[in-house]
Image 1: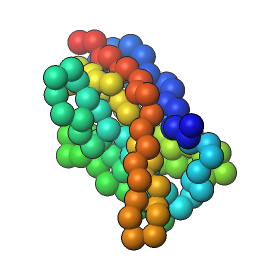
Image 2 (image 1 turned 60 degrees about the horizontal axis):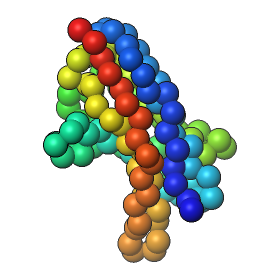
Image 3 (image 1 turned 180 degrees about the vertical axis):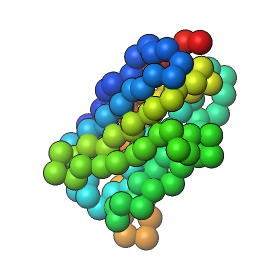
Length: 119
């Protein structure tokens, strides 16, 4: 079963940094948009950052200037560099791959990785 696989979560103090990685094998990776979402218990899963196949990026307002999304197509991997972390960044972070299928697309989700920021 094809599924993106995240890594890199953990516990960090406020002001610290973490880098999340997501590897997606079995896909034509370079042709697909990738994104990171986050979710807390009982809350909606929200978009954090996205990167299109052409490398263009988009960020949720609260992470602009602190987080950077990037991709390495040769490694089938997308990254989320998170700097100046705040307690409110605490969440389970999910990798999303949007497989292009002509005029439609199909989403694939990773299993999630916990990020905890202590104050």
